[in-house]
Length: 318
Ligand code: UDP
Ligand code: MG
Image (cartoon, rainbow, N blue to C red; front, side, top):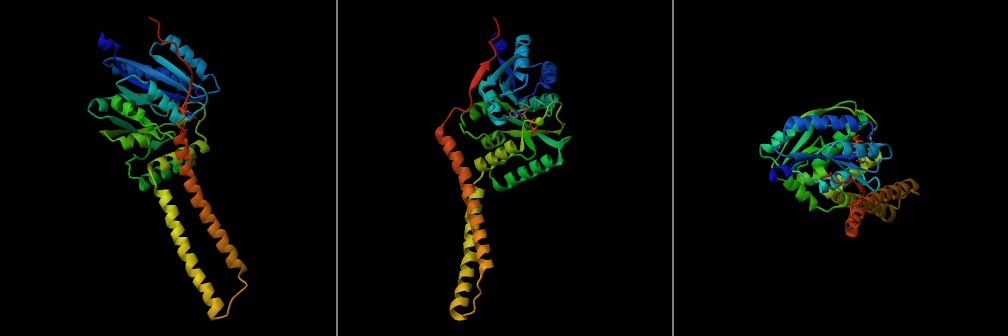
């Protein structure tokens, strides 16, 4: 009785305009989870992140047809990280898989992820050995970002790894205790520690539909990752300030020397303009960096709920 009620595995899927993928995704997940022959029930948790296509309608139909399916409809588009967080808040399984809806993360890999978790790990993430059908700009910026992040933070955030992973209930409960507003889940999970390992896979292109990650959203995610896990930019701003002040001081000495001792000075419009522009630029950069941190500070001080749920799947009959 108790064993039947137990949920072995939850699969959390954020959905943003994925009408082209939901059917195939559900089919492949179901095949994999049936083959896994779990020691308890599983659930598929779909979080609709303010899609404006037919995704929600498809989820309603799925939930009515398949008792494993639950869905939650957020009140608007809150972004991928928050949609996943909402899923983690609802997940009841002993283990939780986070997976993209567009089939870029192969559901079949869950078998390997689950096996490793059972072997005694709390986190098993899926690392991208290669990426296909993604444009060069995206591949290069992603590669550069992961490496920059690793070089300026003390947290061992794995490179070339998205959110596709399996985590134990213990890790889920720990994440629920981290109330930060600007989520960077892969960083938070790395920060948590516990026994972690990875499996490698080749990342396919999107099955259908188009990416919901605009460059704007990618930049925001990158800034959240950096500001949440590193103070290096603030320190760099300070160092730059010192360096520029040092140079400015030397130039001042030189100017005074020319003016007072050698009585040999130029009208100097060019050098004046240059130093004004340069100093202005450096100051704006430093102020901007500080602003990025302060903006996140104030968001966390406000303590708003991270998201609101507009609709949830009805509880299963019986
Ligand atoms: N997604 C979301 N909210 C958004 C953008 C994306 O929930 O605002 C979901 C999307 O449906 C998918 C996952 O996040 O399941 C990854 O998004 P996408 O495939 O568009 O990103 P990419 O693979 O291009 O980085
Ligand atoms: Mg994708």
